[in-house]
Image (cartoon, rainbow, N blue to C red):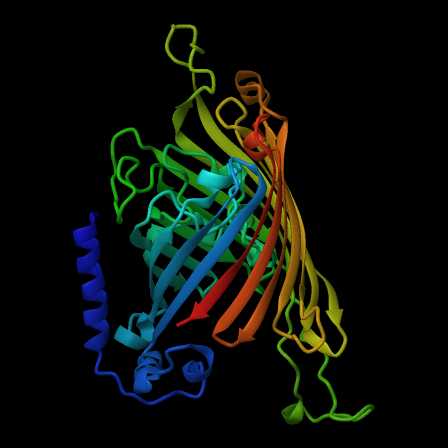
Length: 444
């Protein structure tokens, strides 16, 4: 799919939405766009679309970062990331039972801060991309069966939207708290993760009671076009192979928290019960991924018994867990939670043969700042023995981030970040780096 075709798809999507004979009547459960977004309800257009099953969301992030010491060189840079998301309930829209369509288009601009100033293996900013371009990230249909316990999805899809994911790590700006680097480093053009999705099929089954789930995806082994990073491309070339990933998870469901009485000791009738939205994290999962194509050895001179270049299967396994550790007694939407993740990759192919991360985040740490989130996390990336010997490299790179996301109002957030990168890219020449900066995030 080239950029011309991408523009045609965008036009068709919006033309279809405008042709839906929308009634501009705001529904009771619709979001309050006038309060939650900068641009508002567009004179009732958003709420009207929402009543017909069409949810529009637009966001922008601007990051300013400065490398204060170490790394490649000192310097400051700006990066920008804009997203447009359209989620369509096709049961409401076109009477297609239990069917959802989702389109996510994004544009990325700005400098290449990590590439030019820091040189970290894991990266410094999760909106930095290799090229300034606009492209489709998601474009898929999903059909659900058996009371929504089984779903099948097909289309352009990134695996980091559902696999190897912990919600508690999403507040951090460094990239490894999205997709971990043990998997992110793999593939001819990377796996289908931000900023590129790939043609894929995904199936997911959730047990009755939602205590367990099993999901698997099969994707194009080479997302996009390695020779052209601009725009959206789908190429199923000979030799690309596939990437398969399977994840089994345990997500025990909690009972609703106790309702609060209006006065100490007062009993509350069921219809009068009031409580805050309860924030709770409890997930444990294990996953396995594998490419069907083979990849060259880290040592380009390595050959097999026939004298041909040595090639290996690329695969790995990962584990993750996240938990709510502390809930504030009088504010059940606030408290402390944490996560841990660990994954492996093929040591004869990849720079890092394992990576691990853990972190803590506190929702509502400061009194009177109930919507703010503070976090601190650390990631270790271990260099494979072969990579160390071939490159005279350090044994690991360690990355630490402390951040505080301040919700200024419902549509604006300000998030300063402080990062320390030890042994950037496991390069013995690069000094340890200190990075400071801030993110401005707008709901448009």
